Image (cartoon, rainbow, N blue to C red; front, top):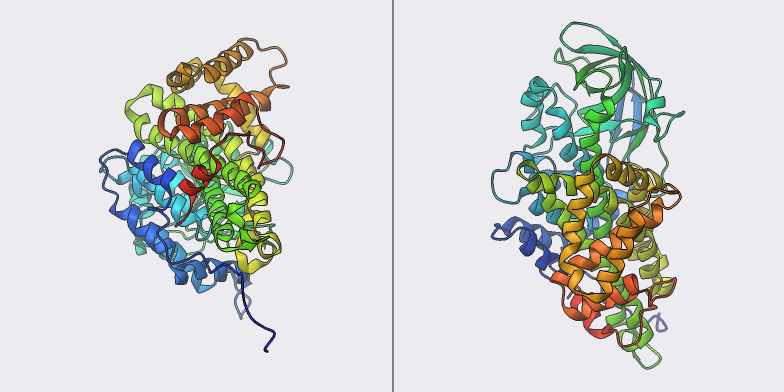
Length: 541
């Protein structure tokens, strides 16, 4: 067609290194993991920008998983089948150590290095990050049962991926999922009705009940909450038993989700399902809380990754698109929007990496352990919420082009609310922060240490002292929970930027988020903000 001439359309954003072009990530990893060998981080950054790899993410979402409850003869099989692209993504993630590998990695800073790789690979496709994240997070809980940990942790940490359902003795690697919530309870897991009856004296039980959300039902094993004689308890449930028989584990249906479509989430039924106690009977929440905290960390990292990829797409589009006689990037109002997105992205990235370092330091540093506990809840509350706002604004930067599936932006937009919901929605995390403040005063002191270096900045000093005054009284504390946690997150992000980012970045963040010279939407940064410099720092090429 002679009329079909393609002009003024940006080229694809591909064939680039996601790690070396992300200044905030590159500098943050060097800061939080000084002296670490980053060859594996560089390698996955280069891989994530390859056109064929980017195509895997599209394929996995265009061909979602399918549930097969029975075989051709009528036998119950309860299998979830995936497009080949899913298995390539999973194999790459496991092979590069994004799952449980850090728990057995004796090199320095394993959790920071793993966080950087998870951040980079999540930008290719976020859905498969769910089973990878749960496999990573399961290890601290499994260590409450030495026998199970001895057999399973090396398989969970193995640099391999085997999708076959088979007894663990016949596999070189394994994936772990989780099933906590039920129809009547949701986040109130103590209302769960699934029952656990002791079967033998060696910690084996039989489960009877259902789970409204079972994440990654194709996994080799699961951590499950159920009511035992002494109360809610945590159990380990393998899909295949040592005698090679299938553990009773009926998948009722897969959830038809808003986003995260490449990943399977299911409703499952237990009837005489074999399970082994993890931790003490009646202390299920306390046992599984470490798994929840580690998955919350990945929610923060995954949200930061989503914001970064949305920002990269928006800057790339604005760089190559011309409007009103000039590149879109040259229009000052577009610079304001992109700079605001860049500030959001850099702050989220800095906080994510700081949390990962706290995980590295926690085993030998009580202050780091306290910071990890409160900081994960703070980050989960705020960073995950900002992802939805940022992805919507970044999509709008592409106009109508951003609203079509080929642009990637709709997938990012649908994915954005997820991390704010899973592993405890906003209110749950805000209330968790309050409980930590009331029960663990050392956590507030750990956060205060984080903010102290920023006290030299008058603007920060006033805001930090105002927060401390508001935390000094418990009057109507639940009413104020969201506002308090939001301010904690913003001040912590600001303190990190004041210490480590260029002045034009930290000033832009402090003036807008802390001082309040900011509107109710992105793109309302105050006059004299170094818009162009902030955008150029964040550019993906």
